[in-house]
Length: 119
Image 1 (cartoon, rainbow, N blue to C red):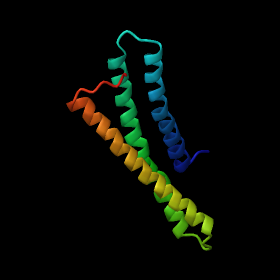
Image 2 (image 1 turned 90 degrees about the horizontal axis):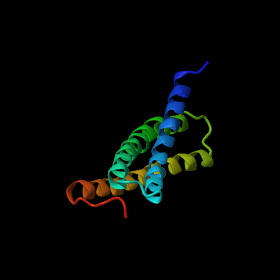
Image 3 (image 1 turned 60 degrees about the vertical axis):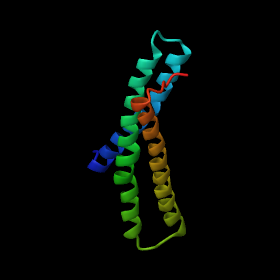
Image 4 (image 1 turned 180 degrees about the vertical axis):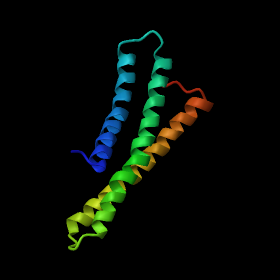
């Protein structure tokens, strides 16, 4: 029987995969020369941006990083590998924050400068 942690983990993994599929759909629209790819790519980009922020900036630190850090603090034996892995998780989160900043710059360019997403 699944407990709450297993359900949260499966929900997190499904949302994580959802955000990585949207850019590929936009690329396929461009390659297949859709009738109006810019509006469709914008819709996919909005979905991608929402799922990126939801999974990488909200769910990842709440469910993965904080849980790993709490588990590390309650361990009886501190192993170097455990500390390194938790530090790597937090550094990955910092990379997610940087990539989110870049994503927000693209959104700003789309909204205020009317930059096209399709080259």
